[in-house]
Length: 292
Image (cartoon, rainbow, N blue to C red; front, side, top):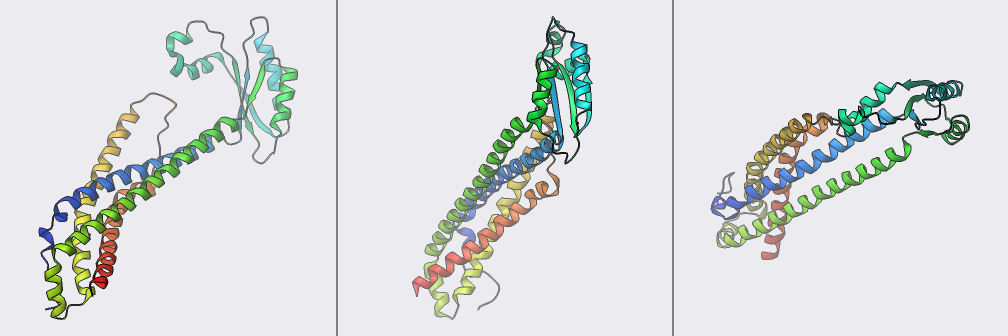
């Protein structure tokens, strides 16, 4: 009598109809949240790599000044400063190209007074004092400012990390909601099959045997919903990536998910199945213990 088969008609329970749909939605939302967190992590690394050991000097346009002479003075000062590996001035065409995504071709060609820019690359580990360099630049070149990217980059990274933690928090909430739903469905199944469970107990069935039937049932339902939920999430991500690739803007760099990011679509349905299985088992064993 105690064989690896189902003595309870669990497939006829109402949970067999709605639980896969609930799990599919939960896996879909969790996958999108996790992918968002991985994408932000990739962007943060790219921002750090692109801004590491770099800075920009901006010389404000002054109609009464000789801008070329000011740029030359700034370059001489920068190149003679210990800790600076490279200092190169951008010509007006390069500056216009940088501003074109925001101003458009018409705005750039309108004869606007554009600032002069100098790209700086510091010697790695040089430990240069940017505040002192800023003071030297202002004294030698009126209207010159140094942007070492640290201020805006730090604020941007703090914001990105905050959104990442929010995404992980959402995944935790989704997991907790999934556990609650599985507990509710399992208890409903136990109540619906109470008489059959009592008969099984009378003929020698142990609690573990009954729990295995529920856990296998919940595992199959979770996989039945989790796999389609992961597939739909992958399709939505592919659609978003396709739309983002058409945007011609420097504000959105392509995020690299890597193996860890793409594995989310496989790992989450499996985790949903395991979570459902262990939650169902624990719920059944705890409930049956109270029935004795």
